[in-house]
Length: 445
Length: 169
Image (cartoon, rainbow over all chains, first blue to last red):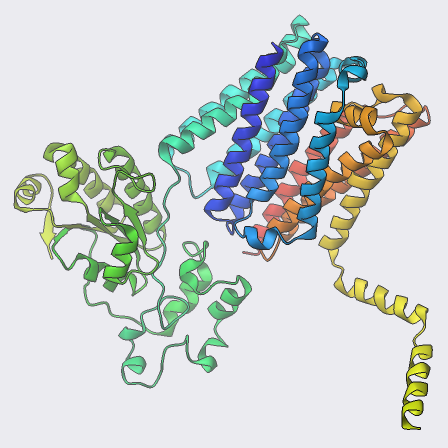
């Protein structure tokens, strides 16, 4: 039983530490990610509390208890220290901090004490005698557990990473964890006087396991961002402005008199950003909508309506024309993102790599690709529309067959029409075009 | 002759600046640099780390190791005595404060962090109080009550702070 408790404890702490570090490294500036990481830290401490309660109340023989004590103490110290060290992307600056160095030194000292002290001399009383009522500990464990699960769920469901199928998995995990916690900590001890110690530790692990599986299965939703303009901070395309064309203005990025009075510039300085394009709050930013578009009206070269369009080599030109005028864009291509950016001069627009690579989405996972594109389109609608360029149809057909890809495009077409988005399909090929004609209404650009 | 004059002037300048003035300037500098969040950081460290650690060590010495609920603290006491107890408590609070301090830099989470730190401060005060009451043989609040109140405050104040921060976005 004790081995099971030690195993579950290690898995739980490792899960929370990995999830916290992973999410924070994904985008350390995001408010929700910071909140999530704090929650993971609280969960680690919570797991330690639950483990301690189990350990104190287990009454296991000394030979089992002492190695477990050493493993638990070491695990806790390593997990907390690693969590703090790994949580920061700028590790070079972090490592120079005297406070961090003090934490590392104290952690090493604690580990030294744990592994050099002969705990068999201390007597089992130190670990097993419990002060207070055992039921109180179980009740406390349950209250803490349910509060933690509620917080995790609440912040995840408000997160921009939320996806419907992923949310179902996480909600299911939360419900399971609450049931386990209530059963093991409240119902069994209070009403039946049964203390299932292994089960109390299992409650937080249930939530962690479901969450980890959900992240592994669906990943995090990729968020479309605005293209950074080389001449403005907010992203407006100065090439569409008469003053810029006539040489009266070099773009507000280079005109101090203009940008010093701009609310967007002030906001950007405050947030330490290079422009709105690399700000995490761009989608819902009211300030940008109010200020940026009052400067001048831009006229893009291509006027795109919502719907599906077939394009050839001019797909990137059409996309950039729209994104530089402020529309959100997204590219799904088989070309490596860095090559695509270099070749087509794309600076910040999100590129999804369709490839058999850990960083990309495999061509045979049409469901995952479709879900990601559909979720991005929904977000684009909230920002006033957008353009999605799908430059991977040939490869998708090669891997999945034309019928599956046809269904995939039909699904995307439905989403496009519902969410006021333009879908550009590049290099579809003659045969596939004929198939498409029968199924959906599209136009050629 | 000129050199001598210079030396005299230097000496008179040194005599003019008294220790009281240096301390006064130092206090002014600290007050200038202080804000609510930094005060809360300091209070959290003093209560949750130092005061809780010292009072826990004092309580264990008076009542024995069974009075402490946390087995890691029991272990440290059995291994290194009172210093071990204080060291482990300070180590834990340093980790929490370092992490919280890092995520608070230049981001829109001022009140969320303040809420978390205030809960930490209140938790530290409660734990210290309970330790001292137990050491004096008085009826003290159960550790489960202290932890539950602390966790309740963490959840409540952090969420409240988060809501205030969101109002300012």
